[in-house]
Image (cartoon, rainbow, N blue to C red; front, top):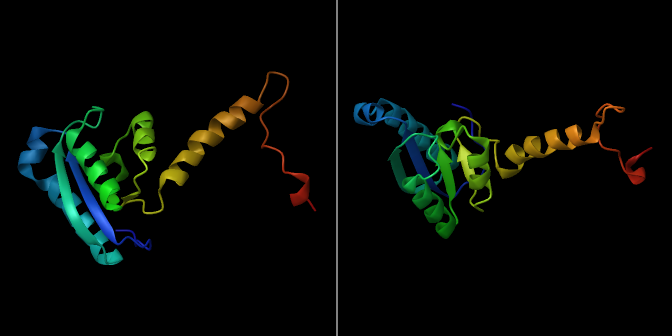
Length: 148
C-alpha cells in the first residue's frame, strides 16, 4: 500500500467487482475493503458509508456509484476507491466522475485527482493540434515575462 498524505476528514467508500461469482466469493471485496480501512486509518478519516456494487465497469449506469457520488458530494466527503480501475477503465466515464465536483481518492494512486487525471487528456490534443504536415508538434510557447 502506498502512503497517503492527503488530509481527508470524511470518506465515502465504493467497492466494485465485475461478476456475481466475484461478489459471492467476497475475495475481491475483502481486499478492497482492507485498502479502504487502511486509507481511513492513515488519514484519520471517518468512513461515513461504503457502497458495494457487483457490476461491470463497462456499464455507465451504476446505481451504487451514483449514490456514493451523491452522498460524498452532499457530505463534502471524499469518494475513496481501492484502485482507480474500480471507478472505470473508460476515460470518457472517468471524465464524468471528474466533472461531478466530488473529490476522490484512489488508494493505489493517492496523487491522482481531477486535475492530474485531466492534464494528460488536455495536453495530448494540444500538442497534436499544434502539429501540421509542414510543422512538427512543439511545446506551447512560454510567455515573454517568464523568459530570461
